[in-house]
Length: 198
Image (tube, rainbow, N blue to C red; front, side, top):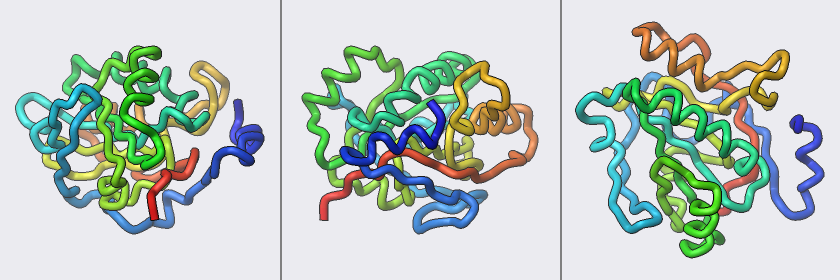
Protein backbone atom coordinates (compact mmCIF):
# COMPACT_ATOMS: atom_id res chain seq x y z
CA UNK A 1 0.00 0.00 0.00
CA UNK A 2 1.57 3.25 -1.07
CA UNK A 3 1.33 6.56 0.75
CA UNK A 4 -1.30 8.13 -1.51
CA UNK A 5 -3.67 5.26 -0.74
CA UNK A 6 -3.33 5.72 3.01
CA UNK A 7 -5.54 8.80 2.88
CA UNK A 8 -8.56 6.53 2.49
CA UNK A 9 -8.41 6.31 6.30
CA UNK A 10 -8.67 10.08 6.87
CA UNK A 11 -12.30 10.05 8.13
CA UNK A 12 -11.19 7.92 11.11
CA UNK A 13 -7.54 8.83 11.63
CA UNK A 14 -5.53 12.01 11.36
CA UNK A 15 -2.62 11.13 9.09
CA UNK A 16 0.52 13.19 8.91
CA UNK A 17 3.43 13.45 6.50
CA UNK A 18 6.14 15.38 8.32
CA UNK A 19 9.35 16.80 6.90
CA UNK A 20 12.12 15.11 8.82
CA UNK A 21 14.64 17.43 7.25
CA UNK A 22 12.91 20.51 8.62
CA UNK A 23 13.42 19.64 12.29
CA UNK A 24 10.88 19.86 15.10
CA UNK A 25 10.69 20.43 18.84
CA UNK A 26 12.35 17.64 20.75
CA UNK A 27 15.64 15.80 20.31
CA UNK A 28 18.32 16.68 17.75
CA UNK A 29 20.38 14.38 15.54
CA UNK A 30 24.00 13.94 16.67
CA UNK A 31 23.16 15.18 20.16
CA UNK A 32 22.51 13.26 23.36
CA UNK A 33 18.89 12.40 24.06
CA UNK A 34 17.26 12.56 27.51
CA UNK A 35 16.57 9.37 29.42
CA UNK A 36 13.04 8.15 30.05
CA UNK A 37 11.51 5.45 32.20
CA UNK A 38 8.23 3.74 31.38
CA UNK A 39 6.43 0.51 32.22
CA UNK A 40 5.72 -2.13 29.64
CA UNK A 41 2.39 -3.89 29.18
CA UNK A 42 3.38 -6.48 31.82
CA UNK A 43 4.16 -3.75 34.38
CA UNK A 44 7.95 -4.00 34.17
CA UNK A 45 9.96 -0.76 34.26
CA UNK A 46 12.27 0.17 31.39
CA UNK A 47 14.85 2.95 31.29
CA UNK A 48 16.38 3.90 27.96
CA UNK A 49 19.81 4.35 29.49
CA UNK A 50 19.69 0.98 31.25
CA UNK A 51 18.99 -0.62 27.87
CA UNK A 52 22.06 1.16 26.47
CA UNK A 53 24.39 -0.50 28.99
CA UNK A 54 26.52 -3.59 28.48
CA UNK A 55 26.96 -4.94 24.96
CA UNK A 56 24.18 -2.83 23.47
CA UNK A 57 25.23 -1.05 20.28
CA UNK A 58 22.00 0.85 19.69
CA UNK A 59 18.36 1.15 20.66
CA UNK A 60 15.56 1.71 18.17
CA UNK A 61 12.70 3.70 19.73
CA UNK A 62 9.47 3.48 17.74
CA UNK A 63 6.31 5.44 18.51
CA UNK A 64 3.58 2.86 18.00
CA UNK A 65 -0.20 2.51 17.91
CA UNK A 66 -2.65 -0.37 17.99
CA UNK A 67 -5.25 1.68 16.12
CA UNK A 68 -3.22 3.35 13.37
CA UNK A 69 -3.37 1.44 10.07
CA UNK A 70 0.08 2.70 9.10
CA UNK A 71 1.64 1.56 12.38
CA UNK A 72 -0.12 -1.80 12.10
CA UNK A 73 1.17 -2.24 8.55
CA UNK A 74 4.72 -1.68 9.81
CA UNK A 75 4.50 -4.13 12.74
CA UNK A 76 5.73 -7.03 10.61
CA UNK A 77 8.63 -4.98 9.25
CA UNK A 78 9.67 -3.81 12.71
CA UNK A 79 9.56 -7.40 14.00
CA UNK A 80 11.77 -8.39 11.09
CA UNK A 81 14.28 -5.67 11.98
CA UNK A 82 14.25 -6.80 15.61
CA UNK A 83 14.99 -10.40 14.59
CA UNK A 84 17.68 -9.33 12.13
CA UNK A 85 19.66 -7.27 14.63
CA UNK A 86 18.85 -8.63 18.10
CA UNK A 87 22.02 -10.75 18.16
CA UNK A 88 24.11 -7.81 16.97
CA UNK A 89 23.48 -5.64 20.02
CA UNK A 90 20.49 -3.69 18.72
CA UNK A 91 17.36 -3.43 20.85
CA UNK A 92 13.87 -2.24 19.96
CA UNK A 93 11.52 -0.35 22.28
CA UNK A 94 8.01 0.47 21.07
CA UNK A 95 6.10 3.22 22.86
CA UNK A 96 2.34 3.76 22.78
CA UNK A 97 1.90 7.45 23.63
CA UNK A 98 -1.77 7.69 22.60
CA UNK A 99 -4.01 8.71 25.49
CA UNK A 100 -7.04 6.98 23.94
CA UNK A 101 -5.58 3.44 23.78
CA UNK A 102 -6.21 1.52 26.98
CA UNK A 103 -3.75 -0.89 28.56
CA UNK A 104 -6.14 -3.83 28.20
CA UNK A 105 -6.66 -3.10 24.51
CA UNK A 106 -2.91 -2.78 23.94
CA UNK A 107 -2.21 -6.02 25.82
CA UNK A 108 -4.78 -7.95 23.78
CA UNK A 109 -3.51 -6.59 20.48
CA UNK A 110 0.16 -7.21 21.32
CA UNK A 111 -0.62 -10.79 22.32
CA UNK A 112 -2.52 -11.41 19.10
CA UNK A 113 0.28 -10.20 16.82
CA UNK A 114 3.07 -11.59 19.06
CA UNK A 115 5.27 -8.53 19.53
CA UNK A 116 8.71 -9.86 20.59
CA UNK A 117 10.19 -6.63 21.99
CA UNK A 118 9.13 -4.44 24.94
CA UNK A 119 5.98 -2.44 24.34
CA UNK A 120 5.88 0.55 26.68
CA UNK A 121 2.80 2.53 27.63
CA UNK A 122 2.83 6.32 27.94
CA UNK A 123 -0.79 7.55 28.13
CA UNK A 124 0.36 11.02 29.27
CA UNK A 125 2.35 11.31 26.00
CA UNK A 126 5.26 12.73 28.00
CA UNK A 127 7.95 10.88 26.03
CA UNK A 128 6.40 11.79 22.68
CA UNK A 129 6.43 15.42 23.78
CA UNK A 130 10.00 15.14 25.10
CA UNK A 131 11.33 13.58 21.89
CA UNK A 132 9.17 15.47 19.43
CA UNK A 133 7.23 12.37 18.43
CA UNK A 134 4.43 13.26 16.03
CA UNK A 135 3.34 10.13 14.21
CA UNK A 136 2.99 6.39 14.50
CA UNK A 137 5.28 4.98 13.36
CA UNK A 138 8.23 7.31 13.95
CA UNK A 139 11.77 6.07 14.56
CA UNK A 140 14.63 7.29 16.75
CA UNK A 141 17.91 5.35 16.47
CA UNK A 142 20.11 5.97 19.51
CA UNK A 143 23.70 4.73 19.84
CA UNK A 144 25.36 3.28 22.94
CA UNK A 145 26.45 6.76 24.08
CA UNK A 146 22.88 8.03 24.02
CA UNK A 147 23.40 10.03 20.81
CA UNK A 148 20.59 10.25 18.28
CA UNK A 149 21.98 8.99 14.97
CA UNK A 150 18.85 8.70 12.82
CA UNK A 151 15.21 9.73 12.99
CA UNK A 152 12.29 9.43 10.60
CA UNK A 153 10.65 6.51 8.83
CA UNK A 154 11.48 2.82 8.66
CA UNK A 155 11.57 2.93 4.87
CA UNK A 156 10.15 4.88 1.94
CA UNK A 157 6.72 3.25 2.12
CA UNK A 158 7.43 0.38 -0.23
CA UNK A 159 6.89 -3.26 0.66
CA UNK A 160 9.87 -5.40 1.59
CA UNK A 161 11.37 -6.75 -1.64
CA UNK A 162 9.65 -4.17 -3.83
CA UNK A 163 11.60 -2.32 -6.51
CA UNK A 164 12.78 1.06 -5.32
CA UNK A 165 12.44 0.32 -1.62
CA UNK A 166 14.89 2.26 0.56
CA UNK A 167 15.29 0.68 4.02
CA UNK A 168 16.26 3.89 5.81
CA UNK A 169 16.42 2.42 9.30
CA UNK A 170 18.35 -0.71 8.32
CA UNK A 171 20.83 1.39 6.35
CA UNK A 172 21.41 3.58 9.39
CA UNK A 173 21.83 0.56 11.69
CA UNK A 174 24.27 -1.12 9.30
CA UNK A 175 26.39 2.03 9.05
CA UNK A 176 26.34 2.48 12.81
CA UNK A 177 27.38 -1.12 13.48
CA UNK A 178 30.18 -0.79 10.93
CA UNK A 179 31.56 2.22 12.77
CA UNK A 180 30.67 4.55 9.92
CA UNK A 181 28.90 7.90 9.94
CA UNK A 182 25.17 7.52 9.27
CA UNK A 183 24.75 9.10 5.85
CA UNK A 184 21.04 9.88 5.96
CA UNK A 185 20.29 11.24 9.41
CA UNK A 186 16.67 12.35 8.86
CA UNK A 187 13.84 11.27 6.60
CA UNK A 188 10.18 12.12 6.29
CA UNK A 189 8.10 10.30 8.88
CA UNK A 190 4.51 9.53 8.05
CA UNK A 191 1.55 7.88 9.74
CA UNK A 192 -1.21 8.73 12.20
CA UNK A 193 -0.90 11.69 14.49
CA UNK A 194 -0.09 10.74 18.09
CA UNK A 195 -3.20 11.39 20.14
CA UNK A 196 -2.17 13.74 22.94
CA UNK A 197 -4.80 14.73 25.48
CA UNK A 198 -5.34 18.48 25.65
